[in-house]
Length: 112
Length: 112
Image (cartoon, rainbow over all chains, first blue to last red; front, side, top):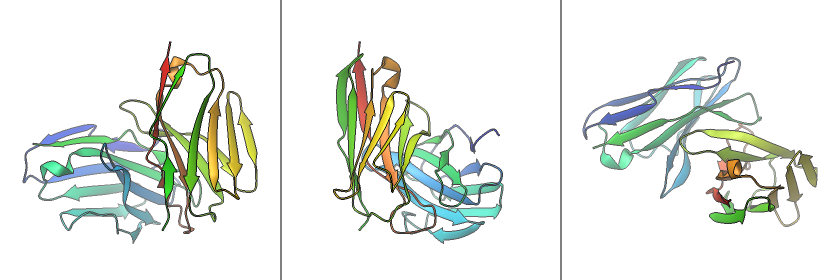
């Protein structure tokens, strides 16, 4: 298996633009997680899905953030409009039940 | 609430043992985990321990769990420069949904 695949690897955009991050979880995994990592706040859970259904989005910072999982093999995290304080590394992870999480390589987002 | 605490930095000399400590507040997690993050990469599962175990050894890695004190530690024997990374401990907290709660991460610096 190729593992969790995230795209793009790097994203540089201007304030106010829409940003879409993509994730393909490991085949067969039924849970998907979006995390954000910054120096100041460490690793924060934004939202997670179980069987494609959002279970807990309490970590989503604002209404500018939205996430979807239209099927078991794809998820998106969208920021609209983006702001400089959204600059971070965004990780997607997947798991099967209450097992360990497997992480993607992350998307480094820079909002200028 | 659910919380996982780690010291932020540890520096050791090559060949010495490293001990990274972690405390957590919720004791209902079935497994507790150690993840490793190398520069520019995602988190990789390093090892885990079942909550009814006191110790687990895996080559140079030894995990100790003290459930009474809610204390988890990771010992790396014969630390190498390639072990330089950020180490995160994690546990599932009170939910059974697979969500992982991570500590802030401990940066391990190995000096030659």
